[in-house]
Image (tube, rainbow, N blue to C red; front, side, top):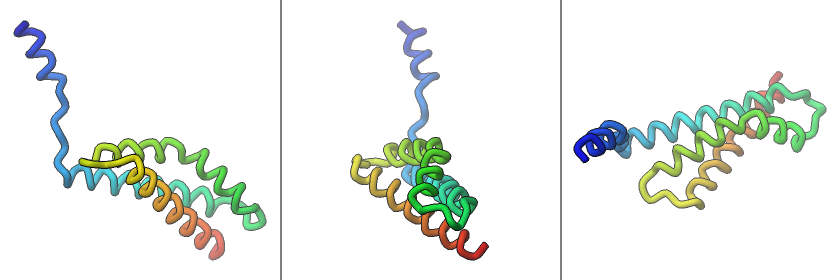
Length: 104
């Protein structure tokens, strides 16, 4: 019994503070936004925005999953909160990518 308690306490992850969770969310948002922006900016000018967005979403799937995971770790986070953060971050990335593409 003692060995089981010792093992479970050794494997238990320390709980993150709200500041740590906020930092992780901010980092994940920046990664996702930058990935979307970089992908869209790299697409040809004459390519349709839908095709550019589709390519960006496919390429940035891991960054989106990381962002979703981090937002779900926030205290009292709901599915709606997670979705809102992901969509807002995606749109920021799209806008940034389109501005970059226009200045190239």
